[in-house]
Image 1 (cartoon, rainbow, N blue to C red):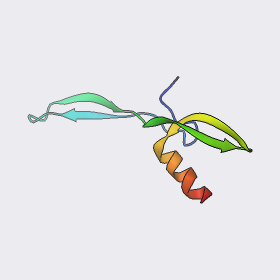
Image 2 (cartoon, helix red, strand yellow; image 1 turned 60 degrees about the vertical axis):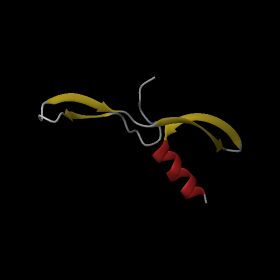
Image 3 (tube, helix red, strand yellow; image 1 turned 90 degrees about the vertical axis):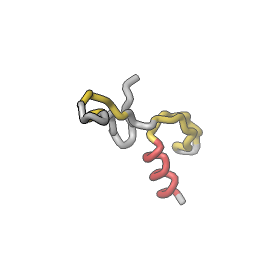
Image 4 (spheres, helix red, strand yellow; image 1 turned 180 degrees about the vertical axis):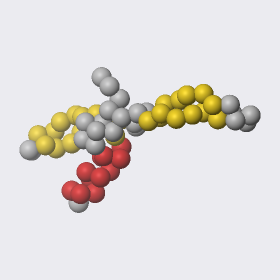
Length: 62
């Protein structure tokens, strides 16, 4: 399974690690995927999604 949120379609971002001497080595920031139980059409579904997407969904449903 790829590290991608199925709702927001966000994937990993890449960039550089910078040491004290400013040497650059490549690194990756993964999406914070967690398992959440959400209700879809009256049924509870366990789904992996980013925490940002879950917060947006719960805020919209309130």
